[in-house]
Image (cartoon, rainbow, N blue to C red):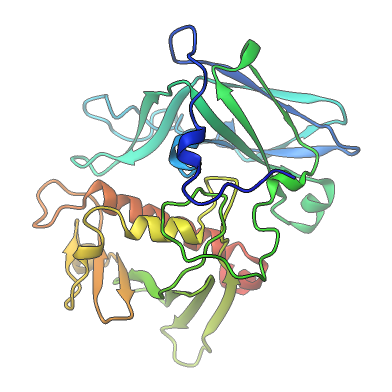
Length: 347
């Protein structure tokens, strides 16, 4: 069993011997079926959805988003979608002993929002030599039959990689699980621990998209130590409300999973904590006057903040850190609604 990284110990473990050659260091991931049955990998929007994160960030960053459908942020002007509509999602079977080889350019490709056009665009940068992790979701045949999400497989590797190949065995492994005793207590989250270190929340928070003439209203609550609750009320008073609860992951080997530590990390970003106020200050474009909505975060001390969309001439522009918070809470909502306990709210 791989030893867990103690809190804040990962910073000194990320360097690699001096690399020869000039980055980017392109590699090929060899996703190999090392098990005893056929497995499946999901393909969406023309690509296979694997993620890459860096040791330097505590494996918290997301360096391999699917951005092929976005134009580059370096294009002026960037008008958003560049490659047309995505093909239908599909599953690719990998037989026993077979492999699926997928290239990785050694570039970080992440989506962001252009503050002038308010449209999504792709930003790329060269990744330096160092230690990284690849994560991919794998489905066993029974997962496809039951509609389950499958399991995450991870593998740590270095750039540059020997021979330019990273072998990723896809059989179930205990090394892919970070929270082996979820019933045990975990230290309070600081937002600085590695992504695979379990930690617990110490404060509660509610959030939701507010505004607009909608038939339903959803409110989410995050409660210590690691509980997510979703409540849905209806415009029609005769319709009974719905609610569900599920545990927030206290850690993850996959940087794309939102954890308790991610929440604390995002709320500690520069300019976030001091943006809360008693009268819900608004940052970014407030579209509620036009039947739109804004993300409102509410703390238990009575303060709150509203985060709209990027705009160039707002009285209080949405900062990149605030855009990160919006993206994280959107991702948390999507992730937690996928839990079996919340199936009634996915209708």
